[in-house]
Structures are given as C-alpha cells and as structure tokens.
Image 1 (spheres, rainbow, N blue to C red):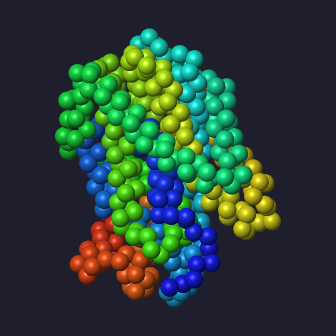
Image 2 (cartoon, rainbow, N blue to C red; image 1 turned 30 degrees about the horizontal axis):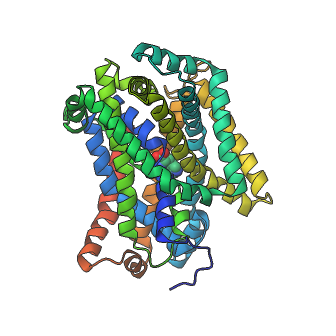
Length: 447
Ligand code: TRP
C-alpha cells in the first residue's frame, strides 16, 4: 500500500462528520422541498431516490477512491492517476470544472444562507409570533423586494464563510457538527409532529410518495438527478479531497451508506414537515425558492415555544449551510494557494470577494434585475441550473467513468473490498447503469 504523505482524519467518525457536514445543508431542506413542490411531488421524489441509489452511490464511491488512491488535491490526483493508468492528463479537467462549480454554487448558496441568518434574527425578535400565512408571506416578499436587506444578509453570510476558511479552522466546526446534526434531526421531527396535527399529513404522504407518473418529463428527471448531485456534494471534487485524507482501513461502502442515509433522511423529513403546512394554509407547493421561508414560520408562530424552536431551527439551518459553504469555497482557496503566490488569507479574500460579487448579481435577480434573463432564466436560476443540471453531472460522470473504465482493476478491488458477486454488481452499475443513466437523463432534460 502506498505510504501516506498526506495528513489523515483522526478517526472514521471525523471523516463521516466532514462528509455529512458538506452534504447536509440548504440542499436538503431549502432546495429539496421547493423542487418537490415545483415538480409535482412523488414522481420527483421517487426519481430522486433512484438517482441517489443508482448514480449517487457509485459516484460518491468513485470520488472517494480517486482521492484515496491519488493522495492529492482533485486536479493533481486526477493527473497522477491518469498518468499511472496510461491515460491522458486531460482527465484533470474534471478537477478544474469541479473548482469552478464550487465557486458558482457558493454565490447563490450564500444568498439563501443570508435568508436563513435573517430568519434566525427575526425569530429572536419575535417577528413571526401570532402571524398568519398572509403576513408571513408578506414578510418574505418584503425581504425579496429589498436589495439592501438581501445584500446585508448575503454579505454577513459570506463574511462568516471567508472568516472561517481564511483561518483554516474548518475542523473545529466539523466537530461541532457532531452535536448539531442530531439536534437538527430532532427539530425536524418536532416539525413533522406539528405537521401531523394540521390534518393534512395524509395528503402530504400521498403528495410525496404516491406518484402521478403523468407529471414526469425530461425536465423533472433532470431536476431530480441534479438534486441528487447537489445534495450529496458530488461532481465538485470535494469528496475526492476528503477521500485523500482517508485511512486505508475505512470501509468505503459502509461509510457511503451512513452519509447517504443521514442526507436522505433529513431531506425527506423536511418534506414531511413543510407540505402539511402548505396544504393546511392553502399555500402553493410550487412557490419556488421561498417555500421553507413562507411555511415553517407559520408553525413557529403557532406552536407553544415556537419562538425558541424557530430560533433553534434557523440557527441550525444556518450552521448546516455554513459547513457546506466552507466545503464549496475550500477547493478554490486550496487551488489558489497551491498554484499562485497567494497565501491562505489573501487567497480566501480574493476568491471570497469574487463569489460575493456574483452573489450580488444573483440577489438582484429577485428585484432590480428580475427582467435580466439568459435562456429565459434570471441570474439566480441560471447559476443554479448551470451548476446542478450541467456541471455537476458532467464532472461526476467523468469521475465514475474514469474509475470504472480507466483505473486498474486491482486498485478498484482493493478500495471496495467486495466479494466476487459484489464486484460484478459494482462493474455493472459503475460501467453501465450510472454513466448511461447520467447521459440519458442529461439529454432528455436538455433536448
Ligand atoms: N450538499 C450541500 C447541500 O446539500 C451543498 C454542497 C456543498 C455542494 N458542497 C457541494 C453541492 C459540492 C455540490 C457540490 O446543501
């Protein structure tokens, strides 16, 4: 086995926490629930679950394998492994497009992180107590209409991200995730409990799990696949980077199972908490990116102790968003540090300022620039669509194709530690099902 030149995670637990900390974020709660609502419910949910299983698992494993075998940053790991397998250095493009994806995603991610920060404060000062669905909707649209408010909170969120990444203290945060992630799950369960009291829980269950396949089209399937990539932090090389710190003794499959179960459970709980409120208040499931912000405060405004629960919820959501945001910025910073004379702090500042600027363009698309459209999409939607539906799937596809077709068999066998049957299943899934799936969904969605 190759000697490890590189630092390593202190334990398997530390690795699971870091990977789950990156995976669990706004994607699970904010993005998942609004996409389910917009795409008509169960058909989206089931396709999403299928994408997680058939595409997400092999790509997650491929990224970890590339990292653990390559022992370097994503770009250099790809170069090194491609060279070793006698393949073109062009494979390093995967690492490069990943860095770009992280940069673009963070710009709009930070805008939503800002909403979450804003709502944390609003909960503290009691803005939601006693409010009904209408007034809560107005609070939200008031925020969207105000470029100044959005700018303030986007800037605050980016400052936190820049501060943390500049100091390189991400490990400390990851250990905090150990207690905060279970707390988030408990709060979600309380909210699901509230949903059960609204009398619309049955409707929610059939909305989320009993599909109307007629609602399915190429666009919905592509959205579901994009969400699978987004929520598992795939297609950006961040999982490769994490894999490169991974000890040889860690079993990749069981670790992947843990991370995926946590991530998926949180998304499903979010749906079960949010849709009863949507139905009980006659709101529109297809509300769009504001969905959690116009629904959950209704629960917080109406349950006893709601102010505290609201505060805790948005605080935990912000925290989850921060641990994911860090993983989005870190690759850009690491690349600048390694490839330019910039040291960590200036590298973080430079990339942070560019991300922030792009985020400003994204937030203006909710008000002043709402008519600035490209391909019929405003800037916010364009950034989201281009990354989740194009860049992440293509980069992820590259990772799984490389591992399945280029990396030598022995490495793959050692990495996966599977039985002979397990390996044949892997071969079928990684060589055919996942790549063909990504390509078909991709083409169906864009054509
Ligand atoms: N997975 C995170 C979420 O669900 C977002 C995220 C963090 C991400 N790192 C990523 C998405 C890398 C794609 C690629 O909120």
